Image 1 (cartoon, helix red, strand yellow):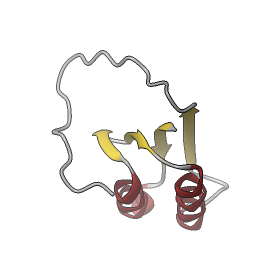
Image 2 (cartoon, one colour):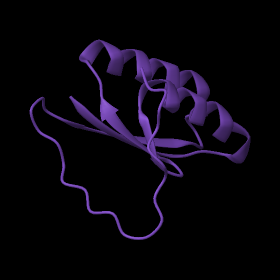
Image 3 (cartoon, one colour):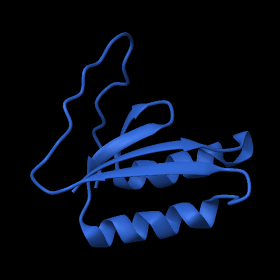
Length: 87
């Protein structure tokens, strides 16, 4: 399925959540990631993210789209370079 992740965490946890997201998804903007994950990968990703978060302060939004669908993305302004080392 196509997954889009947006996070807002305390500065001290940003490096950990960034590394966790990069293991699974493409980095498309400062705190935005997207990519294709199986249901098992999504469960592992969610567990890894929860291990990093302070659930009373940090927030992560995970949007999922069913297999066979992909959102249309229109980019305006500066964008992140395409990743080369994704699972």
